[in-house]
Amino acid sequence: MKKTSLILLCSVFLFTACSTTPGQEAKAPSDPKLTGVALAAAVKGSLDNDLVLQKFNLKVKAKDADVTIEGAVDEGEQIALAGMIAEKVKGVRYVDNKIDAKN
Image 1 (cartoon, rainbow, N blue to C red):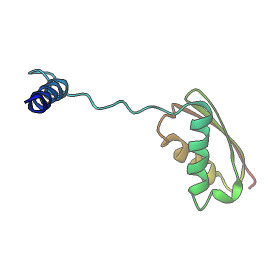
Image 2: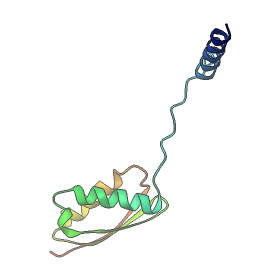
Image 3: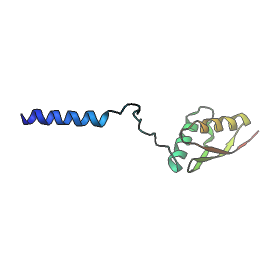
Image 4: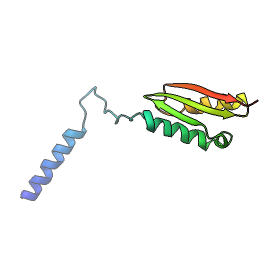
């Protein structure tokens, strides 16, 4: 009898904890945003995964959600590509693109 009561009590508790009231939606867990060193590493990883940009070994710094990219590439189009890739990384608010073109 004790085992049945305990199972019933746990079931009621779980149902109450997991259910929502009418008109209230369940909230998904918030997605933590990367900042600082972790954000710089994520942007650097994205740049290094690009076959065009990986050979330039661009440097990335981040403060809070703002990212700075430095280095040199062959063409202006590659500067724009690096900026677009960095902007797509989750958590990036602003990209300061300080990349120089050799040509």
